[in-house]
Length: 221
Image (cartoon, rainbow, N blue to C red):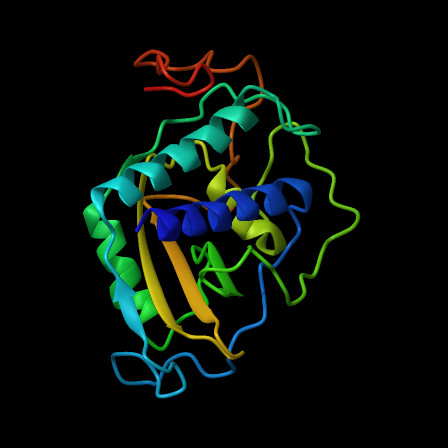
């Protein structure tokens, strides 16, 4: 289980690294052509598909990883992005995790804005990403970043007012020998609202009505 948790966290860390470096990514990566049928449950093309239990340990690490990178950006440590005055700390929400299972991982509408990662790996091998990403080469973030469709995966991860997250994991036999396909989905309680700033630029955590998180100097309680 520890190895699997490390694998998923590496997946999530790599996602954060990718969207910070290339915020214009559509996060479209190589997958089997058919993931789900129109009926509930996994498609027949997902061989040996099953949900992976979210243990308390994995739950805590997923939340910690989100807060770690949100804190880093909020403190202004992720150039060229400015620091954030109002970035909230995230906590776990079981109902959001359930929605991942019901709607994103086992329903016909797989591709949604809050599907955080969909990468194919060998579970016990070194992390090897393959497939392609489409990048926006001329993206320049304004001081108060506004949501636009091509960068919706990036903006959701750093949406200041999002303070609850729930994730689900599914696994099936990979499309290559001795590999597994791992699907990691995370839902958030809010985000990607049109014509709304992703966060407010300014001194880190300077607009926290309930104080600053003692563990994360850039995040509000």
